[in-house]
Image (cartoon, rainbow, N blue to C red; front, side, top):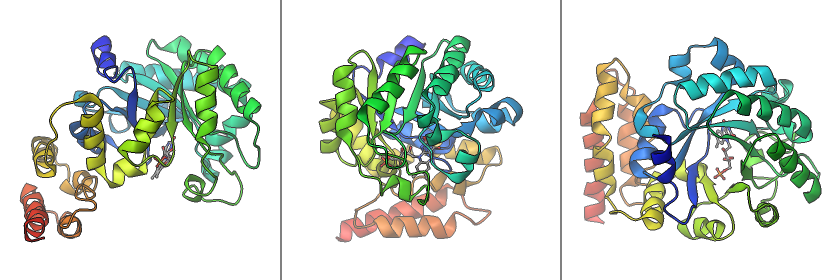
Length: 335
Ligand SMILES: Cc1cc2nc3c(=O)[nH]c(=O)nc-3n(C[C@H](O)[C@H](O)[C@H](O)COP(=O)(O)O)c2cc1C
């Protein structure tokens, strides 16, 4: 099963596209939708703290639909034994990869000594990775930054990677900017520290055996192709979420297949949405992830408006989505 799923990503000369882990955004409904759009992309969960995996409600935190494969579980934490337990649980739930977050800069994360502040502790990250890799058979990977605060030291970055790779991590997602641990909000930390893709490219040329994915500010097919010429993969976060049709265009451009209309893709979500509603789920939890489907299109605003105004009503059903589609496509025909 895993071989088939991994093969799925290797069509484009072994190159990969991935949708970034995003808290509150890449939940299971979002991932299901993204999978419809991009059959070949690797999907990531939101970050889940290892402690929550071990002690919390696993169905809620870890449950996913088989359609989502290949899907990676992203863990937060810095205690090797705890991370190993969480990784094992994640692998038992069927995740194809366990990823350790070494890039999140929020205060809450810093107080818990994980996320981006782990960039300062390569030996600890290596211990974590070694414990996780010993606990599971699926790949253990790391998502990191280039450094923290004002540090601009490529050798230090490469030493971090080498130390962690030696412990059993063969794949790095590099969010190609520093994290500033003081004075910036998490949002600003995704925008203000400058992007330096060259470090990720240099890492790949110096460590060809490692798989390197670049993340940060990638928002078009041209930008993805420019990354894929130099590294193994491109990971998109905000652009994929806000303009999900981009994911579909990327998947078709890179891996082939038929380009489907936005409306067609949305209709493909219907059986899933209706099944969740039949179980007592609310439409709003699903359709909030599709609001950007007509991004940049003449009917995009109307589509978003009909859905956001109607989805919170307790009786909201698929008919609302049909109305939103009519609003969008009607305007497009008129345009
Ligand atoms: C709402 C939101 C939540 C995020 N949550 C996580 C997270 O849980 N784990 C993580 O590693 N990165 C997280 N990130 C960072 C993204 O994974 C990504 O590194 C960042 O957005 C840069 O990529 P982009 O420019 O393509 O968006 C989050 C980003 C956003 C916008």
